[in-house]
Length: 89
Image (cartoon, rainbow, N blue to C red):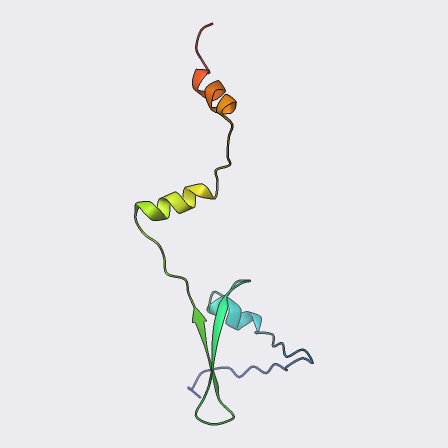
């Protein structure tokens, strides 16, 4: 273990779940839904856990995906109403 590292202990529940201490979650920027990759170490006492980050999409295609999260389908009548706003009768 590296010097200066704090040792934290957790237990495995009956359902095989493990709680990650809050200080580790915060320092590693873990949020609900974070994907973890588990690898067994060289011996039966070591486990390496890696955070799997989704690649950040860049460019115009990424913007289209972002915009889609805020858009909802509209009817033709709704589009025409918006387009005609401000027109004199």
